Length: 531
Image (cartoon, rainbow, N blue to C red; front, top):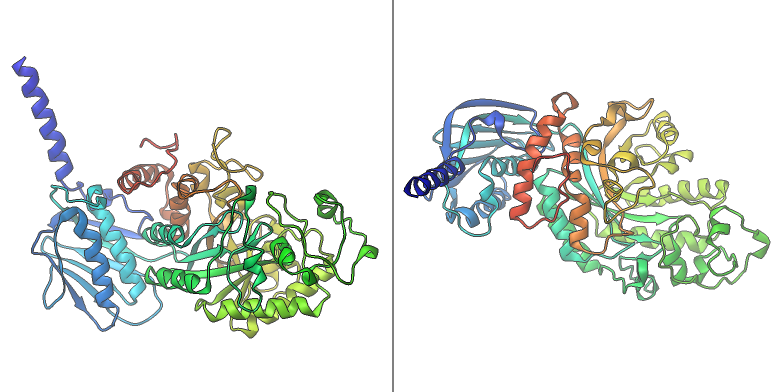
């Protein structure tokens, strides 16, 4: 009996020792997204209770970045790291003042130096440094651990400047804390744009002070008939500020001229005045509108809680429609510091083609009037795009080609690869599958630069992974559909294709899964990975 007890103790001790030892070399680190260059050294740096964070360079935000790092390391280690010391074994070096997102980490046995020419670069370096520690660094309580990381050097920069995700808060409404939680997860993956789909047929989710019915009426329901909700402008500004602290820019979307039933239910005068039998969405979807039925004083539409698309349109020939759009874009632009405003433009099946072209071109002018660059779903490329505006490819390659041929860039979000609401397989408990079943390997194994015929890397602004929420009702649902696929898309957007390899990603995502487990992220454990 004694030999079994001794054997068990030895086995248990070996587990503890293996947990306490750092990974063998820096090249084996499970960093997501994978850095551009990793050079392994010999030995390890050990964080301890006397460690401190030193700043080199000049910026009022260096102190904030130091606190970000200290706050990430404190819960699991219990170390109260001094920040802003004259000397420190962790140095944050701001070497310039530009828009570069590149950074380097030099790890010696005695110290760690993160260098970047921008605050964003330092922030991304911090995310990488945290991933170098044992996964227990994610614990919210103190863990008895030897906090070692292997020596070496990392040089890193993103492949694409726009690396984003979209969260649909219109089909089902998600409040401020849920959005902030999403931002937290995005930041760790070095994503830098959060596209908020704020309006759709089922709900209007942003306060517009000059058009109050949009929220008093249009925000009051969601898919399935729930109570809906909306962001006040103060709440929206809070989200914008929180995102900025995580070096993420908010891109607001007001979808139009289709996907507008919530607005049409709020203000009858925005309707084209088509009287159709209740529920006759098929007739509308097929574009079979009898314009002899146009009513000079149309009534508000009925609120809608289903998931059909393509049946609604703003009145494109009314001046009040453009007064409405001007007010909406003005109010949102005033509280959105980022450069982009998303104008939607997809699935406007009941908008006459000439009317659609006129509408999109006029809305681009309004957006530019308020200093914003328009982004729209790929259908907008069938109109004349203003210089610098962006077409977001989701469905039709020919539309992406139309944008390119006009000299405009493309944001890549192919539904068959990047849509996070698509089911993993036929057994998935959430999601849809009209575009494809997207398992983790399918989400990872594609290259934006050769996905669509005629579209090369120079034509692409970046990559975005949208989550539509027809079937998503809770934070747990978001986590299940988004993770681990968002990590795959983040790596596609950050890491050069030549550096990416599926089997290596399988190894690293398994370790990331342990981090998510510690943080209570309820992710999908794909059978493609040995978790």
